[in-house]
Length: 357
Image 1 (cartoon, rainbow, N blue to C red):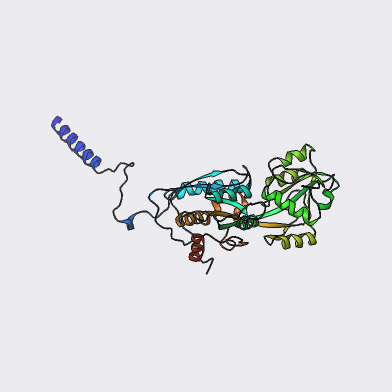
Image 2 (tube, rainbow, N blue to C red):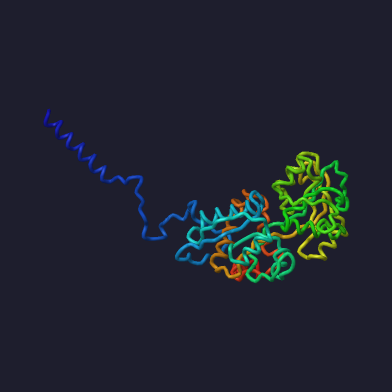
């Protein structure tokens, strides 16, 4: 009996030994030498192209690039951070991207010209002025190229309901925030005032406060000012905040003023803020807008420009989580309102994907 048990134990141990030799640990990874047998399901760090564009081979080491947005918390800044995150997560073989806050278009265009940044946002009209070297720029900027259309920057004038201000002319004698001094928004407000014959710079027709979108809503709430100006995407937080109170209203521009602005600067175009866009707004608002673009250094290498573009068009849904304005960044809009020539690599990209012939 003991002999029988011993034999059975030996057989059982041999079965267990062979079974153990045939098991593959779950943590082992077997790499196939035949690419055709490897998984084609993209991981979180792989890019699944929907554009049909074929990216060039990665460089020996990733390019270090700087992407400038506007003020912290603004639309430029939010979208810039989202693009940088996509680049760093999905295109890390090509680039390592960092972002920085700025005062806006004018500073960004100057930084591009000096080569201190690689990509940045600007109003298209302001970029044209930089290239031409007209006010507020001292000399022509020669190192700026267009990359892609972003979204419309809409001129939005908000005033308190009890201020008695019914039109831009009525700003005279009041206190009003015109945007950061020398910013693109403030220069837009100067244009608007000029077609109404109002001068807050030299004649002081009204008291101008040079507050940013981050600051003027609190100034309205504290009754320090009678209104403020935003040149921003629809749904700008500053306008949302003040309109939600129920104590503010948006002003329309007259047809004559709109025509005069477009004649002054063709970068402007007529825009209607439809009723219901903001809380307590049951009326249409007629105003103007200007295209926002992403620009780059003209001397930036082709691969970096094309990777940058592909990171946007391949990831619109993800980028739109940062701000709904990203939804305007389509192939159909890619070169809308172009005022500065495209970077050659951007032009080649658009030709390959069928945007340009």
